Length: 328
Image 1: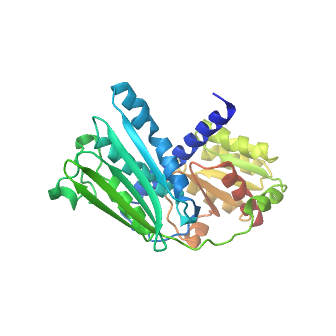
Image 2: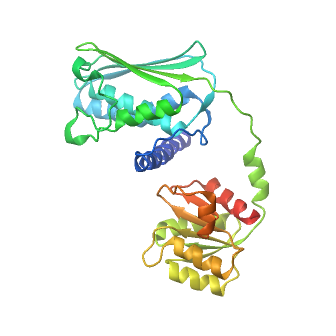
């Protein structure tokens, strides 16, 4: 493959991995209703549709060809204005609907995807010419844990998709005829794009400020990854494989900032933060976790924590946390 193709494949892998992490996080907080849009950014719906097709290519092309069947993808993507939303969430919805379409045509068939603007609303239609949904269960497909796929499915896919579209102030509808196929229609409002400053350029200037950072993480791969990110940016890094070692190193070294994993054997990240703050209350501490930490800022401060780093994290996220910590 050419370098361009390899970079494209790596980009798809990275997006899929990060989207997977977001999916896990949403399942963790499934019992809580999310209505906020604080994580919304500028998105291009057509780009997200193309991403979803790449994510599902293995099923509608590679696996289908091995089985000797043909799945035809028809795209009719109109020019759309950018809008505000969560890219990972909407990619999940489109990916889920494409997978459902593939399930509906086990002997092969056609999946059509159309995007258009109607009355200041972005409309996405995903249609298959498969077996259709029986009338008696059509009204239940968005119910949590309802599935027709047996033990291979959790029954959360359509329910989560419904919740995501609802959080985007949109609607999702299904129209199906047995023996003729199913069409899902998603309508999303066109949100005003808020112009923001060039944070990347600003961050590059701020990164010039260097620091001595203690990284406390029991997983070697994660510990080395964080250390590499920080070292490559010119920071001096000290690493510890558990909380007790981290506390002892903090006592011995002149540290500017601490990154500590939350869940570790022995003592937890909370205990590390509280102990270190007891030694020097001015050193900023960032907790690293893959779990959703839903605590108020005051409660975090009371536990000795200044910042939260959610796994998996991008390079820029880690560097941004450092700069935020050094400003405290």
